[in-house]
Image (cartoon, rainbow, N blue to C red; front, top):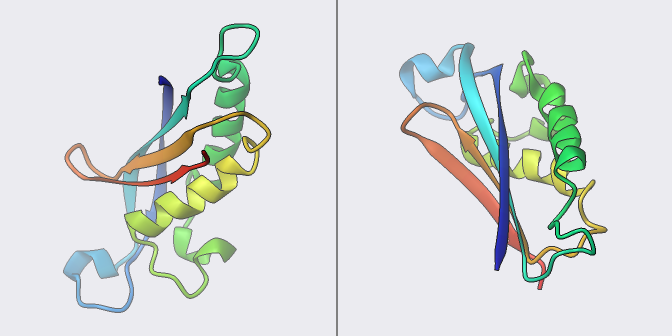
Length: 126
C-alpha cells in the first residue's frame, strides 16, 4: 500500500455550543494543522498516487475556505457544534469532492487543534 501525506497550518475561530465547556463556549482562535493522507494500492503511469502539486493546490483552496473564519458562521456547521470531529468531516467533504476521480484506496483528513490533540475522518473506497 502506498501512502502520500501533506499538510498546512492555518488559524480559524469557533465557539462550542450545547454544553458547559468553560472558555470553549466563548469565541476563540485555534492554530490548526490539517493533514491529508491518501492511500492507494497502485501508482499512476508517472509513479504517483496523485500529482502532489495538484493535491497541494486543492488543499490550499480548502484551507482558504476556513482560514481566519468563524466556523460557526459557515453553512456546513449550521445546526452542528463546530467540534474538531465535525470539522474533520466538513474538511474531508470539501477536499474529497476534488479527489474522487482518482484511484484511491482511502482518504483521511486529520486536524490538529493543539500540539497534543487531533481528530480525523477517513473513508475507504475499495
